[in-house]
Amino acid sequence: MPRPTNVKNDILSGLTVSLALVPEAIAFSFVAGVDPKVGLYAAFMMGLITAVLGGRPGMISGATGAVAVIFAPLVALIVEQGQTAGLSTDAIVQSSLGYLFAAVILMGMIQVVFGLLRLGKFIRLVPHPVMLGFVNGLAIIIFKAQFSQFTVGGELLANGPLFIMCGLILLTMLISIFLPKLTKAVPATLVGIVSVTLIGIFINQSNPGLVRTVLDFVQDSNASIKTIKAGLPTFNIPDIPFSLEALKVIFPFAVLAAAVGLIESLMTLTLVDELTETRGRGNKESIGQGIANIANGFFGGMGGCAMIGQSIINIRGGGRGRLSGITAALCLLGFVVFGSELIEQVPLAALVGVMFMVVIGTFEWSSLRLIGKIPASDVLVIVIVSVVTVIADLAIAVLVGIIVSALVFAWDHGKVMHAVRKKVDGRTHYHLEGPLFFGSVTSFKNLFQFKKDKEHVVIDFSESRVWDHSGIEALQNITERYGQHGKKLHLLNLSADCLILLGKAESIVELSVIEDLDWHHVADDRLD
Image (spheres, rainbow, N blue to C red):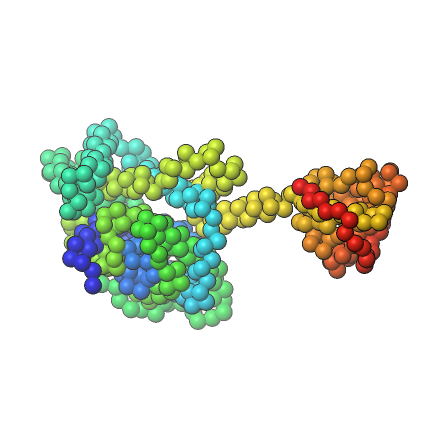
């Protein structure tokens, strides 16, 4: 059982997170092209189920932009097909939601299978520079996402509202920074949100509309929506034809969403592990995410995954246990069902201030100090992952980072060859160590002593291999150079695939390949 202090921290931190979840869920609903309550239901179900069943206590899940962006084309596709078929507006909406919910269910099933197969361990293959780039890129994305709060209809706010909004944002940030130095009895972010909300309500009573609120944000996106109030989610089987054609439509979206959701969730899990100095369970988290998405599909949610921004708010607010995630989800549902009028009055400035603090806490400022202290290739990986995260998405950025890191590793460890040089009865023997390919050709050529070697030179490939045409050309080159000194080159212990490779190039190169050699040691000099 958690200690009372932990219970208090979890509840207060969860309440803070729930306030930050509302505008995000609404915004991502509009990204996906669905009603706000679909995003709010998703935030509630993802948060509650992963808090109970997931493998990382303290981590927050909900409706996310990464998943919304993937499902948006699916919704648009079904809407277009419905319009072409001449269906009514209600029929088009029902059809698009049916396909969306079916895709979310399939997404969840894929994630459950991923966890049951215990594939979560592969997150360990993500190098640290990739993690740094991921975190920095995500901080930039969170920062950029706040810009829309300063505009109405694409136009910057007027001077008065803009000035007040910036002042309230600054006040929220100052409270978040300095209150913990006075007391940690309550989360500073919660105090900041409540304080700025009270100030905003007072200003709006004197000058209506001067301070933008959550409801203002909703109506900027869809003027027909008058409130975020909704009832409890209800069980429904997605309205979609049970056919192979329908499966072909949703399958690509479900697979991509499952992959993106798992990558973002497991990366967030790793980050929370570092912040809390504890260790989560990746496979259990994958199963929890999958079950949550399956429930989303049957109860009218748009699906989602772990949310790094809200997770950091929770951790820094003292939320460490599962109770924090449960509290966040239940409070969110309470706001939607019972307290919509109250939550609609929360100033956007308070939430923007909180997210700016998340940006400051998320960005790895230490990575800037690493320039010049770590290999240039690692700095390059950090920059590449950060840039790709911003211009593409998190999953692609992580995959690109892993590929680049692997290529750099292979290059650094393969470009230098070594050999043991032994002289025996009129011949010189080179025992190679390392692959012979385009990256190691220069190092390979520098191994040989063309003037000093004996008349017959043997290269032993028992611990080496010829990989490409550059390697063949390098062999031909040293054969010719030995020939210029009246000496002959022989190749020993070539693998079967190397023999095939040389056989295909026999019209280009002329090499002496031998199968066996009986000899005795005379000298042993290691060459670098």
